[in-house]
Every structure is written in C-alpha cells, then in structure tokens.
Image (cartoon, rainbow, N blue to C red; front, side):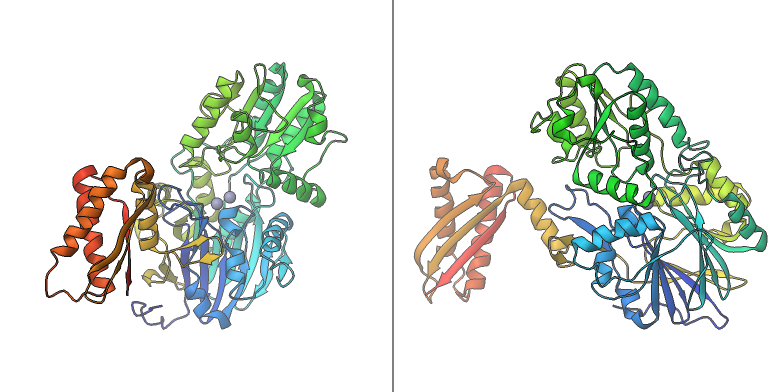
Length: 562
Ligand SMILES: [Zn+2]
Ligand SMILES: [Zn+2]
C-alpha cells in the first residue's frame, strides 16, 4: 500500500472523510471518518457485478487496506441500514479485524444472518443503537437520526468531531406518512442545522428526479386497486428486505380474504426476522405453506416471491419458465413486479415478463403501472435536506459520477457556493478544519473481487481470460518433445467452446500440420525449452485460427519434454 501521495498532516485539528466505495458507483458503500489516529467507518457494503463485465464473480467489496493499516485506531463501524450495499462486505472486514458494529435492531438482525453464514456470528461484537441515542467512540460522538427508506429501521448519522458536526444521511427519502408511523426526524436535522453543521454527506441516487418521492402509502392504495380487480391468483415479487411493501401485501391479503405463501429463502427469513422484532405485523392465519396455498381456490391465493430482478434461479423466473414444482402460471393470474429495475437487470426482467405474458398472465411492472415507489429522495427532498441542515461544506454521496455532479449543482442552486461543494470519488479524501476544507490525496481504494472462497485473488488478467473464454472458448495443444525440441508425440488438440472436436477432424488435421510446420521452421538460435516452444505453438495456433475464423480463443500449449 502506498501513501506517498498523501499530504502532510494539517497543523490545526482536522478531520478527514475518506470514501472507500459508493462515490462513483451504486453499491459498495463505505466511508471512513478519521481524526488524528482514530478512525470509524460508516457502512461496509458490497456490489453485485455485471456478469458480462465480470464473469463468475460473486460480488465486489471495497479495499479495506487503509483502515486495516490503521487498525489500532480503527474503533467501530456504524451501519445506516440493512441493505446489502451497506452491510454485505462486513463478513470480509471482520475476517481481518474484530471491532464493534453499531446498528439499529433490524439492521443488526440482517447482519447477524450474514455473519452466521460466514461462521462469524459468535465472535462478532454487535451493538444495538436507537435514534437520538449518543455513542462516544474515541474523539467522536455519534447520534443516529431516524430516516425513511425502502427498508425499515434506517438512520442517518450526526457525528460530533473535534472540528464540528458531520451529518451523513445514509440512504433516505422524506416520507411524511410511512407505514410504521415513524417519519424522518425533520426536527433533529433542523436543530443540527441551527447549531451548525460543518459537513453534510447526502444520498444522490435520485437527483435526476424532479419533485418529491411519493409515499409508501401511495403504493398501498394502488396495490389495493389491483387486488380488487384481480379475479384469480396474485403473484407479487418484491425485494425481500422491503418489509413495508411486504406488510402492505399481508394487510391487503387479510382484507380480501386471501392467503399468502412466501417463496424464496430470503423472503422467508426476512419475514421471520421482522415479525420477531415486531416491525412486521402478520395478520392471524394469513401465512400458509405453499403446498396448502395451491389447494385453495385461485382467487384466494397470493404468492409473495423474490426474483423481482428476473434472477435466473429465483422463484419468479422458475414460475415464468414453467419449471416450478408447485406453481403453474396460467391465464387469469395477475403478476405484479413491485420493485425498481436495478440497472443491468433490464434484460433478465424482460425475459421473465415475456415468459409470464406468453403463459397468459397479466403482468404489472414499473413501466406499465404504478406498483412501486423509490426509497430515495428526489430533488425537492434533497433541497429540503440541504435547507434543514444548512451545512458549511457539502459532499454528495451514494451515486455514479453523474449523480454526484447533479447533486452538487442542486446544492449550488440552493445557495451553497461552489468552493464549498466537493465532488469526490472513491479514494479521494476531504480534509476539514473548523474554518477550511480541501481535497487530500489518493487513498488506496478499489474493487476487490470475491469468487467463492477467494477474496482479491482475481485480477484484471483472470477477468480478461474469462471474458475471452466466454466469447471464443479454449484450444489446448499438447505435445511431447525431446531435448533438441524434436516432436516425439502429438500434437493432440482439444477444445472447449471453440469447435466441437469430434465433428472437425479435417480442421484439426490442418491445425496439427500448422503446429508441426511452425516447429520445423523455427529459428535455429531458439533454445528448445518448454517456454520457448510453448510461445511458438501458441502464436502458430492463434495465427491459424485468426486467419481462418477471425476468432481469438484462449490457446493453451502443454509441452512435455523427455
Ligand atoms: Zn438502501
Ligand atoms: Zn444504498
């Protein structure tokens, strides 16, 4: 790890905000707050990679190396809410360091599930916090502030530091009428603004949307209309973490005399967790196992399912493909996809919608019906947050570069001068003192790839190979040579994903001849070792295949010298 580009420490007390993820992309959220030798982290999230860009990669986590290098002063992680892009990388951090993790009850319950899967729950130090409670950690005093979002129990954070107060909104919308009757703590944000906020970090996700983000209650009204009009079975897919949306479905089911079966592991798990914590009220007798549900008349059935992004092995995708064990979608069924399309999932969702329509179902989704509201603040909400907190400095967070820049312009529109707004991306810190702020050097930050049990062992070269393999396949050439480089046996040619060897004997013959020819015509100076002969074979095979097919498979020479 190189820190050579970092400037010398400030002479007056200073606090540094160091984004490790989430600034410059959606996902991977993690921000460090550093004062002297002390450090806390806000969130520790992952990102799901685009399978075309990163074949085979399970997920992507932030680079923790800076925080781990400062491990003696790394005091705690504070979590704003339980979405994967905020908690999902925690198991990987806790493999390397043990430290207190603070979060609200629902957030910690979801974290607990993750840690259990990784065998880390027993050793984890999870500490429950509630809005307006204050926690002293080193030189910081951290106060959770209630916000609303597409998951229950979300908070923003006010952090008192030696130089002033930082406010981090977390993911938020300003829903004045949330289902749980716990509106955002407008008053506390305003009070902080009144006392002076040094830096505001605010959610930029929906900066392109005009107006206010609609209330969750509005979705309930719309869903009620759809439920009333439905003559047959209803299948509703949403995010398993969207407890309030799940609540609406359970309530509507009870009102309409329907029963609900839960499909998908995460859906079943989250409903159990949320009901246990009392943040979800399950009407008596509404939930039934799927085997019992399908015995009921169709007009009494509701299936609440995961798979709202069309994920290939999800319950919804299986139903659409007519491969589900118990559920056959048919004419008269109403399918509601009550979720936003996560960028990159347009194709998979489209495929599922088409398949459901072919089976005769009616399908309502974001493009053709009002069945979802966002969990993130729109322009007018963002302006309100800026006006309530009236920060001296502003850092847009949680977004791609276009979102961050848009949010910066919005802030300038409500009167913040441009020199007080910092558009920075992962790895670029902002140092603030009582009277000044500046951008400070590059910190180590980047995307660490997780594939199975391997963390960070896959880099650009392996990814490139995987992309080539997925496009043009692999050709291997094995031969045995003597110490002078004369061919004793082979070449044997095998292929995966290039051509079907058994049906292309003629081609393979030509390829063999090309290899032998290249070996025969090799430079007399060439040392006939495995490496040199391997390179020669590789280039001959590449040349032949490129001339003949204009394809570029991975070529793997296997040379045995006897
Ligand atoms: Zn979120
Ligand atoms: Zn988020």
